[in-house]
Length: 162
Length: 104
Image (tube, rainbow over all chains, first blue to last red; front, side):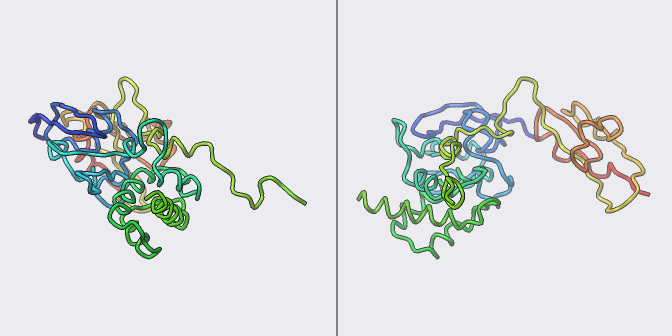
């Protein structure tokens, strides 16, 4: 196992961090252990479940399939950075609470991040598009129906704000 | 008959912290001296357990302890594991157990 160290400068939720890390440290472990941002969850550890999804320069990415040094010079947004400053919630977060789109909540951060990117690209999706966009995130509690409801509600509310 | 709860959506008190990434799951707990652990399950279905040879596991750099079921029943009784290995680094556990269990 290589113990080579790398310098990583990365912006996470608008804050710039400079850390010296092991070259093979996973981005998700960097976020959770080095930055104490434990909202991003480790599910399957091989890119299948979507629980570790973060925004990488605005696009959803599996932080369990990236090494921390691969984020050097890039911008990461985690679930902790989704809500606006000042204690409010992102429309997706509000809609998820309103529609009971979470039970245990373990998959929720990855789903919120994935759906935030999806709605930015597809502001007025139909149900089929939401289901397709959700297909890379596993949820073992809800059977997805209420998650779909939550995403559609958030899309309607965000359209109303524009 | 009317009730407050049956058939009515009930606002959950735990949702906010789950939605903003501030919930505490077991994997989020950070206490001094914590180790990573890998559990060993028998690769042989419905076999009588014969030998667990943990000597090579114990020789691996980074491994703190390797336990078998008889010695660690309380640790392991919750699952179907026959052994467990602990280390400071998760990487040190990756190839820990292959070949450790023999059946007869």
